Image 1: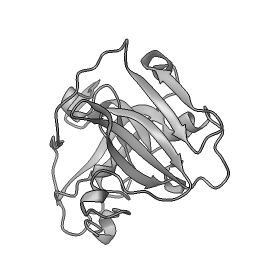
Image 2: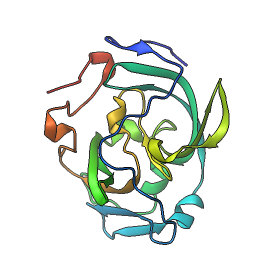
Image 3: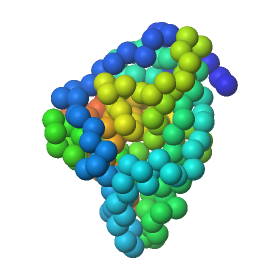
Image 4: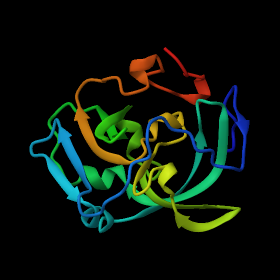
Length: 196
């Protein structure tokens, strides 16, 4: 796996915790995950149904817009492609928006992403992780428990929605939470695409 530090970044072995808004409580009974937008029929999955989906383990490099980079973190989770198998998308879907909780609003946070780069093993909805200093353990609440999206390293980590609540499938790109506040729509750390 390559270990290229993007411009303006420094390497850390820690996984810093950064977020805006409250940390939501998890209730397995009421929690569900919605697949909607440009699909023939919407789906809603319980926590149990999500956790019964096929799992993927992948090692990812993470790059945060606040300038830290963490290499070689291994995650276990559900690949985006597994969730895509559960719906029939309308023709022309090229983007998604991944939603998460923000100040108790189920769809208060979102991040937009192009679909094509997300079809590999490095686009995961994760629930546990390890690195050279830690054995396997669940992600904690502040990191997005019970489920958090980790994008490929070609995207800054704000695209990695915490406390995920659903995926909207889209034909046209649409700004998410930070993009509406002036951050880059494309967010490539190697091109230092921090702001619009």
